[in-house]
Image 1 (tube, rainbow, N blue to C red):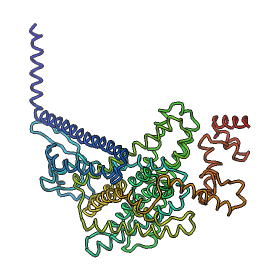
Image 2 (cartoon, rainbow, N blue to C red):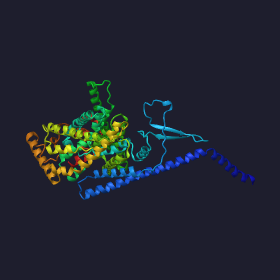
Image 3 (cartoon, rainbow, N blue to C red):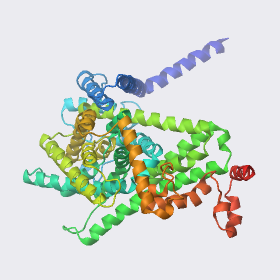
Image 4 (cartoon, rainbow, N blue to C red):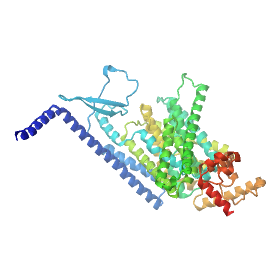
Length: 612
């Protein structure tokens, strides 16, 4: 009986001794737990704020479409919401999170050549064992107490730039390729590629050179490489606002194709240009011909390497969905489609290429091939999913741009630099729009009219890509000024250009609605007739009334050659299209083509023969 009472008492004494010896540790552990709970609560509050604003944005977008309000676009309203939330967080959110800040110096004044990625802090309370904490590096140094408090707000409400590139941007770019309107896009492919490659390059170097002249005159202390980098990132147009208005007003198809094609592809060119410029280094003070050639080769290698990788992954997924019966399980089919599409971005980044280019052309390949192999349910699911996620991501980014004006401390504002930037951007865009249109009109039919050229100049809005590129590196004061200026340019162009789009369409007398449809039909008939007269040997084989897109003279030279190769080889290989490769390739290829032909293709061919 005594033993029964003794054991609990002894256990209690041992526990109290152990707790007493670790009293310092327990106090520190409890404080760490309270800190973790407080951080979790703050993270939840910030996310709740963003999601609530997104709900308001969706309702606002519906109201603008329902009541046909065009004096300002929902993108501009989204920016305004972001500015409002940033103002509230900045001036009324202080004190939500209390923290301790320690100034840490390296031992023995060791020279640090590169900043650390993480910091391990070991705390040893008196009378206890040490406890280790793991911290992630935040750029910047703030000396006074107020800026340390402001930094707390920034840490809780600002996302890492890598989140933009790895999570937010890829769905937007993929959807641009997946939702591409192929008919009018490929009809204008020559003009679009000229604007994308030549125009973006002229805009990059034009902006960089003009800014270098301005900053040199006023001795603002910027290097030519920094300003050229600014010219590259600010050349990425994002006219999501204007495209949305074009859809609502149903403007002329060729104008829509030119502006949409530029916005879909020039992001990829701008990001490759910015990476090449940022990584460019020369051993001599003057840039030699060898340095220039290396830069061009680097650009071509990165761009076309990324293009082929993304297109190849898209074709691989098309072949996989063709040769398997995964379409019997739409959930798995849609999941595979989404995951492989995202893999195209990640593989390119791992290989040192550009994921943006890769995921764009993966989207184009998936739309052209894989989409035809999907079940009806998966076709609907993937289209709606990427359209929805693209809308949410774009709205979130515009909202976040507004928030960042007030809460980030890595933006250094310079109104003179902003003024020079707006002048340089407009002049550089005009520098390629009008001369390039004149050159294209020498051989192009139909020509690009002046009203189109004015609208292309006006459609140079900046958006998510320019903002994300500028925010990736803000380690120096000049880079912080570039980031702040890019943010201001996005806000100005979205609010001013986006808000005035409807008025500009009316002012330039651009046809829209029923007038645009009738004009398109008239133009198609006149072009078909003229081509029939010029090519009398094709009059019987290509009727005037043939649907646009089926007429080989409806496309430029390169697309026409690709059309024949695609119809005779690529589509039979990657889709269930008929005739199959067994019919389109020579007989000696039969052992291979039989392996590459699906049972559905054979069944379709058999049924077509029976019907005949």
